[in-house]
Image (cartoon, rainbow, N blue to C red):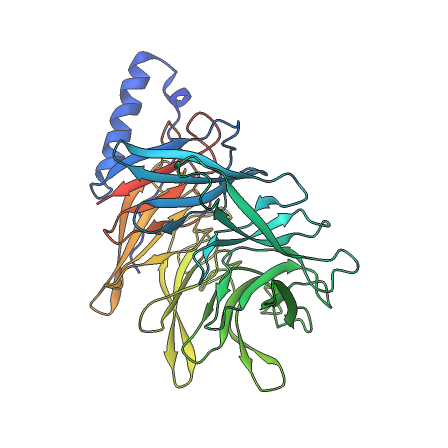
Amino acid sequence: MNKPAQHSTFRLDRFGGSAFGLVVLCALMMLAMQSAEAQTYTVLHDFSGGLDGSDPTAGLTLVGTGNLFGGAGTKAVFRVGQTGHGWVFNPIYEFNGTDGYRLAGRLSVGPDGALYGASLGGGVGYGLIFSMRPMASICSSFACPWTESVLYQFDPIGGIDGNRPTGGLIFDASGNIYGTTTLGGMFGAGTVFQLTPSQGSWTETVLYNFGQSQSDGTSPNGNLVIDHAGNIIGTTMRGGDPDCQCGTIFQLAHNGSGWAETILHAFTLQPDGGYPSGGLVSDAAGNLYGGTPIGGSNGLGGEVYQLMPSNGGYTFQGLYSFGGDADFEGPLGIVAVDSTGNVYGTTWSQGAFAQGNVFKLTPANGGWIYTDLYDFADLSDGLNPPDGPTLDPSGNLYGTTAAGGTGGGVIWQLVP
């Protein structure tokens, strides 16, 4: 594996805070930026902490070719869209606490074109699943508010149906919704659930309760995938290996009377990473990709991995290991894969300034080539991306940072 360059955080006080020190700092920043592939970076929105929210940790969902949706803070759900005058930001919905509280992961586009998502709180206290759509025929302006429908509220009495749902909801061909909760269920360690539509309402079924044994995984999170055989595949942040409890990749297969779990991989921290948090994505060939914020074969800096279909199962392979000796520096969110097999991601605090970066992995000669596309510099461009990039059909990348800008984080675009 290619070893990344050693990273350091540049601070003016290391150079005495003088004008000369500033010149030295700027020169070092320019040298570091030269190591990244030439890209055009643009801040599309700088969060103020007002009605637009702050701390946009939920990630972005692309609808069409020029509309991005996400959440910021505990209340705001937003849209940033491309118009003839550039990019325009507008809040489209504000949670009031009972109808939702903090978007939990990315929104998903349903078969009916509406947006579906999960909120960590709201409802009767344990979170809920909702859908959103623009107002019909009342308002045609870009800035019009949207309407919300609560599909299901998780019950706080015992939490048997789940607690704290996560984003990245998926749909099957019949329109059923699948997702996870990080807590709750029969053993308190999280669930995989199904919501089935029926005459204008939704019925929840818990497909699997985590925590049945020490090895089956706990705290499922992130994006689920339905593979070609109809199996549900996802990750848990903990559980698995009895010595590490560093998380798993699990598969649920329908066996006629229910769903049976198989552990496809149990993380051991080194050499394969640990505590996966973003879930999985699939390419056209059925390969699955994900990342871990910690561990790997090159230190504790995190790992990007692949699962390849093999003899009715999957084979785990590490693609790239980040260097570092601190916890949770690497990829926190989901990765993106383009049509030629390149993998894109972000790190929380890797990069030339140890504030996070955007990277690309290119398959070549049986291995993978790492390219640093952009380094966040703790300035107006933001720092610490909490989720991976969103890729559009033209190869442009979009994402958010948890902080930076004027303090509340930013929405960014990276054009090759």
